[in-house]
Amino acid sequence: MKKSDIQELIQKIESFNAKSHEDLEQFRLKYLSRKGRIPELLAKIGQAAKEDRAWMGQQLNKLKQLANHKFETLQEELTESQASSFNAREDITLPPAARDIGSYHPLTQTLQEMKSVFFRMGYTIADGPELEDDFHNFTALNFPPEHPARDMQDTFFIRKDEENPANDQVLRTHTSPVQIRLMKQEKPPIRAIMPGRVYRNESITAKSYCLFHQVEGLYVDKGVNFAELKQTLISFAEQVFGKGIKYRMRPSFFPFTEPSLEMDIWWETETREGQWMEILGAGMVHPNVLRAVGLDPEVYSGFAFGMGVERITMQRYGIDDIRLFYDNDVRFLEQF
Ligand code: PHE
Image 1 (cartoon, rainbow, N blue to C red):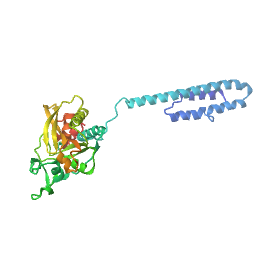
Image 2: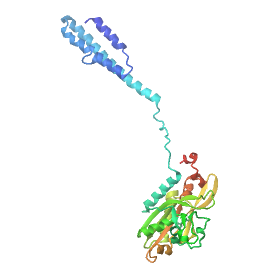
Image 3: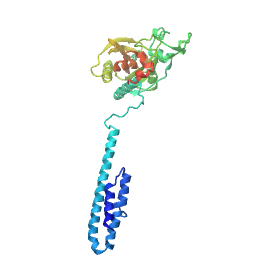
Image 4: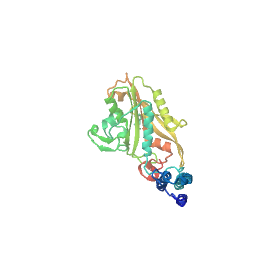
C-alpha cells in the first residue's frame, strides 16, 4: 500500500455523488462494509513493515472517518431532496379531489330523515301494494259509495266494474289503505309508519303532481288521544324543519278520521312569496274504520296521519316546483 493509493481513495470518496438510495448503498458496500475497501486495507496493516504501520493506521483511520462522514451527508441530502420534491408535486393541504359518485335523491334523503324521527319515537315500518282494491282504498276507510274521491276525477282506475264497484282496482290515492292491512294483520298496540307512492289524477301544478309520496302513520291502543296526536306532529315538524318552524293546524274532514285536522307550514323560496303549504292530514281513527277491521271502538282508539314527502322536501330545501323531482335533471339533482 502506497500513500498515493490512499490519496486516490480520498479523492474518489470525496467526489462520490449519490442520486438515489441505491447509489448510496453501492457506496457503503464498496468502501465501508466488512468486505469493502477500507476494512480490507485496515486488515493489511498487520502484514506491513513495522515502520510503516503508524502512518498507515493514521491515514486509514482518517479515510474511514471521511467515508463515514460522507455516507451520513449523502444520506441526509437524499432524504431532504425527496421530501422537497414531494412538497413540490403535491400540496397536502388541498382537499381531496371530488369523485363523481352520485348522491341520494332529495326525496330519499327526506324520507330517511322522516323515518329516523319516527324510529326514535318508537314507530315500526310497514308497507302495502300500490295497486289497491276498492275495499282497502275506500270502503274500509268509511268512504260513502257516492264520495267524490271515488270519482274518475281523482282516481286512476285500473279496473272499473260498473255493476259491482267492489271489483274496482285503483292506483292507491293515498297510503291510508295500508292502515287497514296492518290492523287486520296485527293486534294493538300498533305504532307504525307506512311510506310509499300514491297516485292522483288531478291537474298538475307547482304544488301537485300525478304521483307523489306519502308517509302514513298509525297509532292504535287503549286510550290514545288527540293531544298525543298534536304533540307527535309538532315534535315531528320541529325535528325535521327546526325549532323555529312556522306552522298551523286547521280543522278538516276525512271520512276515516274524526275529528280531523290539516297541518300547514310556512313556505318561502327565493323565487316565491311566502305562503302556507299543507303538508299533512291527520285525525282520530273513525269508529267505523276500527269496526271494519274488527276492533271494538269502545276499547280501542287511535290516531293516524298522512304526510306529503314532496312538499316537506320542498320546504326543507327551498324548492319551488314539485315537477323538478321527476325531471331527472342532473343540474337539479347534483345540488343535493
Ligand atoms: N289519506 C289522507 C290524504 O291522502 C291523509 C290522512 C291520513 C288524513 C291519515 C287523516 C289520517 O289526504
